[in-house]
Image (cartoon, rainbow, N blue to C red):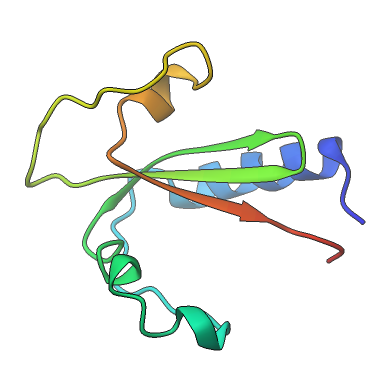
Length: 95
């Protein structure tokens, strides 16, 4: 089971590889999510931030076409996450 330090290292590696990259396609192996229209909005967005929070991995996206101000709880999110307009919350579970 991944612990906090493992997730921190995963987030750091993903940041080096993915920050500022544009998502061209999003796929999932979960049948209940394969046709969820919200997931299609991830494509064409830029990966803006990747952070580990405990056993949770947060991947933040920005839509370069829209520069709207985002209203979020600043006490709970890091500054990079605050400047994002879409957040993917993942959990590695036991893998």
